Image (cartoon, rainbow, N blue to C red; front, side, top):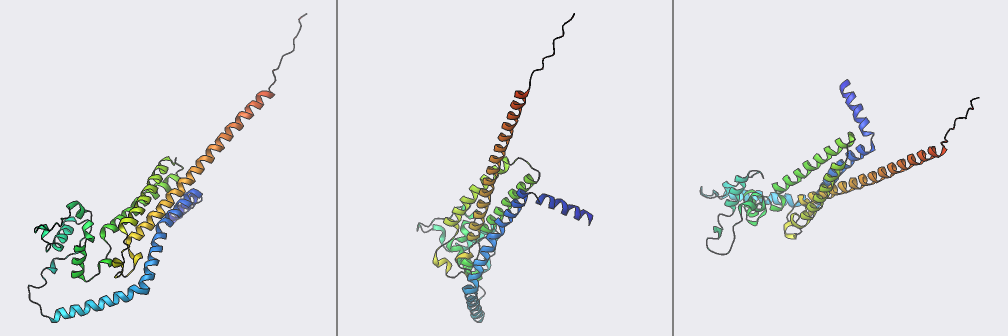
Length: 288
């Protein structure tokens, strides 16, 4: 109990420093404001339209399953569908195998129809997860609309973005608490602001879909895409970085100005003392 009290008092001492307190508060805002904003927007669409659409899809899937059970299909039917499996993004062999099953009826350009096969590096990075073949394959086996599924690779990118930001966040808090020079922190903030801008542009022009056909069956609408959350998060990280870059720049300018003023004051004091100094001449004593 005493140990916890000592730690609490030490934490309060650190939080009394305005730089440390503002850094901690701003970092939390940069992480949680995008999440709250995104959740509110997608939740509003779901409550207005998505819930009814989801209920309709569930009823439709239920009746389709009932019709399939009543049909008493032969044992050979449906064997193709048993090959489907949900794969994590880091499970490369599984994802490659699922893509092969999804495209096994295409012939892989054996008929010379000009259709190209996706390279392995593209499949490895998750590019094939959102291909038309994979979306159709997933929907046929699960009944879940492709627009309602968040690619696992984007989840990894978002999680890694937060991990990198928290590393910067912890390093900055440590530097401010220990009163270290912030030159290294300024460099990291510059890199963070640049990456935030690039990721935001990439999300808007590559990750976020604005096609009405992709959104018409989504339970959460346009705001339901994780690319929106990534854009929001990178914007706030960029804003956080630029704000503290500016603040550190202003602080450095004021410190240099105050130091120069102090040095000028010291020089003036020294000159004044030198002007007031008078040489003392000892009286001449004549010897008789």
